[in-house]
Image (cartoon, rainbow over all chains, first blue to last red; front, side):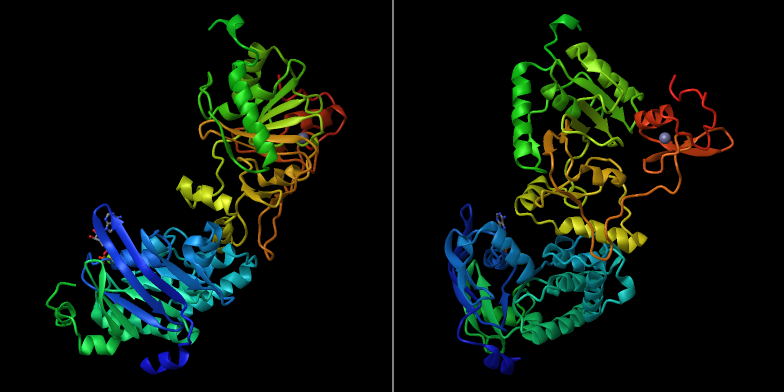
Amino acid sequence: MLDRITTLQDDTPILIADGLGKSYGRLRACRDISFKLYSGEVLAIVGESGSGKSTLLQLLSAQLAPNTGSVSYRMRDGSTRDLAAMGEAERRLLFRTDWGFVHQDPAMGLRMAVSAGANVGERLMAIGHNHYGKIRATATTWLERVEISADRIDDAPRTYSGGMRQRLQIARNLVTEPRLIFMDEPTGGLDVSVQARLLDMMRSPVGELGLSAIVVTHDLAVARLLSHRVMVMQGGRVIETGLTDQVLDDPREPYTQLLVSSILPA
Amino acid sequence: MNAPTYNFAYLDEQTKRMIRRAILKAIAIPGYQVPFASREMPMPYGWGTGGVQVTAAILGPDDRLKVIDQGSDDTTNAISIRKFFQKTAGVAVTTSTVNATVIQTRHRIHEAQLGAHQVLVYQVPIPEPLRFLEPRETETRRMHALAEYGLIHVKLYEDIARFGHIATAYAYPVKVNARYVMDPSPTPKFDNPKMDNCEALQLFGAGREKRIYAIPPYTTVQSLDFEDYPFEPYKHKACCALCNAADSYLDEIVTDDKGSRMFVCSDTDYCETRQAQGHRGSENASPFAESRHA
Ligand SMILES: Nc1ncnc2c1ncn2[C@@H]1O[C@H](COP(=O)(O)OP(=O)(O)O)[C@@H](O)[C@H]1O
Ligand SMILES: [Mg+2]
Ligand SMILES: [Zn+2]
């Protein structure tokens, strides 16, 4: 994956975080976080539980307003925009077309009582697709891409296994061919073998679509398999960042060393 | 209670003004649900307290009121609302659709075409068309504000996936004035085309949910659908057994304890008017057949 990033990466970042901070009362969940994400790049955010990873992901995806700092995003038209300065309508449109968000808990990201086909088709219908047959055909294609058999298209995710739900969530997000996808512990709560299959499957669309991704995980194996770059968080700060293999094979910070040697509880 | 102490049409003038302001706002923003301070009425929710408040606010001494429930003037609900306004407003009441100036309805739009001199008031139980898929009020309001209506099509998609066609037969969602998606209250979809470009003002009142919305005269009302599954108003294969109408909404009526049944107009005024004009259905060959309503 390291080869690809050098070729895909261009000079203009797709997402820029600048001095991001967020407090819950006196608790500083994120402090002064700045970084750039480039097109086609997969960034992993790692750190122990409570270190501020999910909060950061919500700040980056404009679901939470920061107390300090800003997030800018490069739109399809090439202009870079401050998310906080965008209108709500435009931000929401961005969220369900140009972005994806995969939750750890599929029930948060899916409509559990609605068929898989409608779950995948919803984003299309939201942007005005109005041909049932075509929506269903597109949904079928995406289900197959995430290795869900087409004959499950009319079943609700309630009847799916945990791994299938997570794959359905991914299909639901990718159907509009977003440019950036956020994932919060996408493999959390799944069996190891199911995780492996999911990760395998996630790698291919990321590659094929030239997708950029920010993946929050406490699992360093996930970071190693998926990401080009890693940011290590501790107590709301980014304490180390670098190319994934470098950070994981040769960590500089003592905290990262502990993480890598699995001494810290994930 | 003591009849002479009623204000005209029961509600005090202050309250009626408040409701009229909500109605005016609703007319100005077709299909938009305007919150209003719904009052306790001397009848239970579910008996059309929203419609009753709207009617009370628009009624004048010269109005002629008609009240229908499922097309009929003679259900308990219709009779009690009609009596309520007779008593509290002293207005003339009628069962004739063409003679009425204000028509309050539950579950139907009558067959006779509405005229510019008429107002149709709907009793609405659940005003929010997005409610069944999105229970959070904050979220549905935002969806309306931003015209994010993908969810409505999710519902229609589910219908087709499950039944092979859009099976929603009541409360079929519409888009009003090419902007707001609206629930036409539990009227059959058969009635949806009557709302479109209608000459009369249509007002909707939801008492328990405290919402009023409106379709001003001559407003487009489009039933939502898919290109390849277009909206189809339900069409009965039968004709009315009493008046032979082929174009009306029919109720199935069981006629004896052996399970015999026949189809008759749900709009009793329409059916009786046609019979009076000499139209005869299969179960009503004799010109002296007794009226269906004693
Ligand atoms: N909504 C909230 N209100 C108050 N405290 C919160 C809230 N969300 C998270 N926190 C706290 O902020 C810190 C960071 O949480 P979080 O971002 O969820 O960390 P992580 O995802 O790394 O486990 C934790 O101490 C957590 O308890
Ligand atoms: Mg978390
Ligand atoms: Zn008839």
